[in-house]
Amino acid sequence: MGRPMATRLIQAGHDLLVWNRSREPIEALTAFGAVSAPSPSAVFAGARTVIVMLANEQATDAVLERQANGLTTMLAGHVVISMGTTSPEYSRALGEEISAAGATFVEAPVSGSQVPAQTGQLVAMISALGPTPELEDLALDRARALLSPLARQVVSCGPVPNALMTKLASNYFLITQVASLAESFAFAQAQGLDLEAYGAVISNGPLASDVGRQKLAKLLAGDFSPHSKISDVAMNSRLVAAAALGADLSTPMLDAGGGLFRLAEELGFADQDMAAVLKAIHSIQGKDS
Image (cartoon, rainbow, N blue to C red; front, side, top):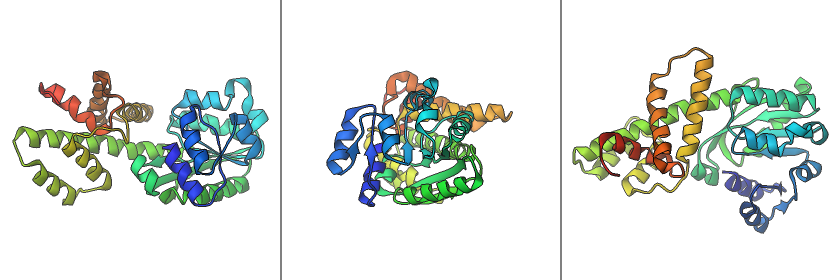
């Protein structure tokens, strides 16, 4: 996700100073015009607006040197835009810490995977927390300007952590939608239907969507090269379930759909596309994928 988004920012005319935990994405981006920084602290030294896109909370803590009080020394006067998906509680605490260090924190999770990231068709959700309301408004304006080449829509969601909570609500729908699509596909297979005809009906029916068409194409082709990995979807299902538990909500659809993605992860398909949840359904049905 980070590389195609950074590429689009360069194409839009932004100067990028970049750092990554592995070298391959950096080499690709520097070949495209970005400047490589030797460390996260060098990024903060060279840029007043910093976008953070990391895999999880542990990686974010390490890069921002939270345990070593790195926030205090690095962040004053900056706008920090966090695009990763974490728990809302973690994001609120991080935002409060960043604000206390004299910077403004912007939550900016996105809905979409690699293909929308490459084509600028993500949907971004934003919330801000900073030392003053005026600085929050300025940071949100800055975030909108940077996100516009990446997203077809940038949606203001109110105070932190509402952007992340909105992302979890969106993921709730995505998880259950794709699990349902895969189960429907398994049904069509078992009935011996013409799968191309089935696909035409689903792709043009009343519940058709971009993600449904993308995942259906993968199911029809048996192509499970990852756009959104099973492991990421399973992680998101856990985040949604934890947020629901905190609100004392029952989640029957999420329990079923999320459980299928977690089963697919346990079966060894963690690095495959989320459409590979079909394999978990086949395993329950006693069939080989």
